[in-house]
Amino acid sequence: MNGNELLLAFAGINETQIAEAADTAAARQIFRRYKARRNKTIGAALRCAAVVLAAVGFVYRGMPKKVPAVLPIETTDAGQFTGSRLDIVPTTTAPYVDTTITPAVTPAASDAAASSTKPTKTEASSSVPAATEPAPVPGSRSNPETTGNRNAGELTNTQVLPTTGQTTTDRAASSTQTMPTTVPPTTAPTTTQTPTATVPMTTINPTSVSPTVVLPTDKETDAQPSVIVPDASLLPTDIPTSEQPSSTVPVAVPSTTEAFLIKQYVYSVAAPEYASYLSGKVIDGSRVGAKIGDTVAAAGWRFADGSMPVVETLRCELFEIKGIDRAVAVCVRFIDKGEALTTDHYYALCNPNAGLSSVSEFLIPTTLPNNEE
Amino acid sequence: MQTGQKIQALRIKADMTQEQLAERLFVSRELVSKWELGQRRPNVRLLKELAGIFGVEIDELIDAELFSSELASCIPSEMQIDPAQIIKILPSFLDTLSERDRIVFVRRYYFLEDIAEIGDAFDLKDNFIRAVLARTRKKLKRYIKEEVWK
Image 1 (cartoon, each protein chain N blue to C red):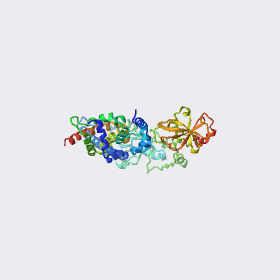
Image 2 (cartoon, one colour):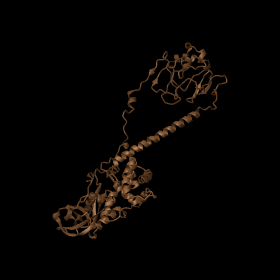
Image 3 (cartoon, rainbow over the protein chains, first blue to last red):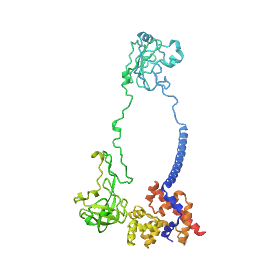
Image 4 (cartoon, one colour):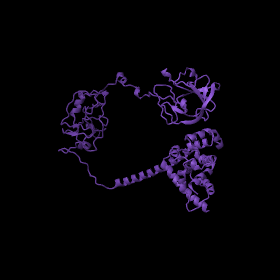
């Protein structure tokens, strides 16, 4: 036995097995299920591997390593805390600038605030009772730990700290913290509305300040558009409306027309005298004259870009058209059926170099798009 | 020369139209036309009948060498096997396969499709199909040995 005989043995397999393989749609479902199962298995394997790797990494991270016992603390010569420790008063990381509210602080309140002193950080926990809480200085932030009033101040980049007159660097905002020796008297505070990191925020002391709140005017709110107008360049300009052929042959779709010819079935005969004749319409059998001869024709679909990917070779017979010279037009009847041709009809073949007024009824006009007429 | 051209040449030599040939084979004239244009390929069963109608060997219709050489590896060389026995064994062997392997095997050796065509039909890679076919051929060889030795 050889391979040929084994190949021929396949002619004897069951119809069920043949039908199963022939049903492409159902077979695709089977392969999709297979792929899904396979991907699931691969996914599970990858997840297991990830868990194992994570476990290895966790174990590695848990292994003892050298860590410094205490973080370095920056101190001044006087031994006072200068603000480098991590347990500094919690603040937001970004300076908050309120551009709408402009409270007014009276000079009297500011003087009262200025006359008080703020204890040092090291003394805060033990020596500052609530009754001696200093009035907040405009542009300052009170320390909630010492004053017990978390809402008394807003974050600012300018912080008034213990009266040592030294300057440190703020960890969060990298601006300077001034510590004057005496709390300077302040004039009426001003809060600018420019959103910069160095703009100080005025604080509001409910007990002594009557803030003047400046609300945004209608004009200001109207300045912001409530509807976002889409950019015209994002809107589609070329929306294809024509039916696309199912073949892979590219079709040149004009972008400005509404309708265009996608493909046309054409044929031409091999007989040299009539090879240049163009295909035309069906003509009535009563117009058919004497037989000229037998030949073969090449037929197929011609697409808009002029390509003809598939060409059929069909046997055919040529006939005269009664009353029409052969040099103008003849007709053809196909013996082999083409995709868009029958074996029962007579089709005109017209000479494009001849005057075709006498055969105008047989000509197939070119389809023009509507908006070009 | 492609299979379609061979079929056309043999048909014209036999002085038959496409319709007449289609009637003999119980298929449509369009299918015969597609064979001759190379758009479709007749399966093994129809090839056998075509060979009978035209009085030729199947080798004259298709380039069977590729398929035959693949299947030749399934035939145990140490055994003498009757082709009639294989015709009986083959359907039962196909029943032992998984759906996936059976579909690929039948598409390849009954419908005589190329590996690329099978891949396009089912959105599979060529290497995967080759692997399935190779694995199935090995199974067929083992099966033939077991069945013939029974």
